[in-house]
Amino acid sequence: MAGGPSGFAVLDLETTGLWPHRRDRVVEIAVVHVSPSGEVTGRWSTLVNPERDLGARHIHGISAADVLHAPRFGDVAGELAALLRGRVPAAHNLVFDLGFLTAEFGRLGVTVPLAVEHGVCTMREAPRFLPHAPRTLADCCAVAGIRLDKHHEAPADAEAAAGLLRRYLASAGSRWDRLFGIASRAVWPELPAGGRPWVRRGAGRQVGQSGQGRHGGHFTARIPDVASPVPAAPDAGDTYLTLLDRVLLDFHIAVEEGESLVRVASELGLSRSDVWVLHREYVAALAYEGLAGDAVTSDVRRDLLLLAPLLDLPVEAVEAVMAEVAGRAADRPGRAVPRFRLRPGDLVAFTGEMEGGRDTWEARARGAGFVPHPGVTKRVRLVVSADPDSLSGKAKKAREYGIPIVTPGGFSRLLRDTRH
Image (cartoon, rainbow, N blue to C red; front, side, top):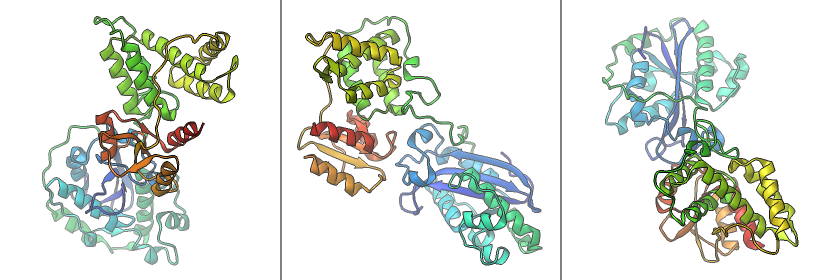
């Protein structure tokens, strides 16, 4: 990734928040090279693992699953410096982008020659080249007739800012010529290449409602379908089902949760066929709990059909299990599965930016008899996270302690079940 001939490096960043010198971090970087005449000569982008909560997901749309295996800033710093070296930095709100880059390089102990006065801010220049236009990127693009399809995705925003710069250059004359000389003389530190590939948005995948893993395919596909050389322990099934029940509390299997199920199945000596049998037993146990007379209630039936793809079971198989349970209502078929239940007085921690605000969710917890807790200790029974794959400190501790993590929707379901 060489810097190439002198021109512009148009930047856009997505971040966890607004304050680079506090604890906010970069989560996506895009760079577009533009020639002095305004032609695009190269494009690069990557997600960045900030090693913390992703912040305003409702703005940037990036989940923790997306960045779980993305490079850290230090892994891309060398390549990024090469892309910026010898070029005039440009961005829509240059102060913001350069502030974050300076802070990120600073965390690595590196000083970089990035200065707002030596760059071009397409937002600050808008009144000169787009008279009476509002200052936002979307509004400037609308006035200039520049397409902006995926606002708040760094590659799209950098491309749009490059379009504005091209529009400005058409009538700027020699306005920024002096900046090329400054950029060519700027001394950049020599940083080693990080050795980690850049990861474009969309490369990571959550397991989510389909049960698919980060690289596609159901998590069960990563469990060998061969007998383990180590015989399964007598309680292996109960151990696996206990974890499965905790994972499915919110009817969602996050990436980390899917990997935990694969790891535990392997440690217990369970094959893929063993796991499918256990999944059917799990369905049978839930169906038995949902019996009303000699039929499974409509609510439980709906829930079990929703679980089918998560358990890698055909809908027909789930239907057959429910029919078998209903036909043997008098004597419970299959094993009893240990179920996770919240009890009055249990501690519940919350993390991430939630719709309606965290205060609202904490109030709902109190109303149900639970105790919101500011941190995660071994006494906490449940963590509610806006992002099930959250990288926040609370989520990391919860995984370390084996505490279930659920989405706000999953917590609502638990509250509903508690009332029944």
